[in-house]
Image (cartoon, rainbow, N blue to C red):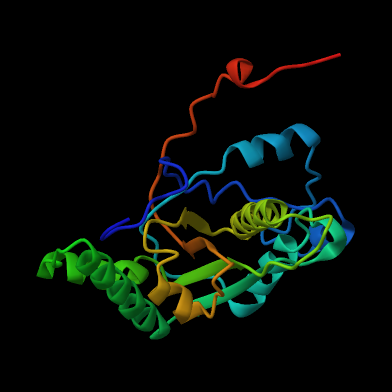
Length: 230
């Protein structure tokens, strides 16, 4: 990313009508539609497969309690030796402008290093990037030194936490997009989040609502991606 971020995938959707309902009595009673529906294994699998990314999001945004509920799910990611090698920073409201200034400082430093100068258009675009959603949940690593858990395992755990976070937000009716980009781990951005030299910004999870009616995901042929051994 020079003046824009990269999405973790290129698809866009707002399959927010497909809400995930637990089959527990407690969650059934709290169903927004008041329907005591039991979700089958096949329905759950199809719901996970329906996940799509959507870029431009608006209000309503998840509340603090909804965000905490999603992070409760995020921290159930596989975590060897329970190191908890991830942290979550929620950016909303005016704080998005502060993040925009950090992005801009990073982009300017990157350009200067290349002997270039940002155009006014690029400066404005970079500064406004955090305004594309009402809430951004940034996931960063918090690596621990452990002889049995190398850094790459802890990085993978952070990625798994991001996926759980995204699915938990979708379950509550919100759309998301996972962004990173070339600015994510520039010094100005890492300093803004208090991320150490040996740690990483692994995701900017933009979240909110979208009125878009996006097409369903095309089936992916898994055969070339899969091998069974016995």
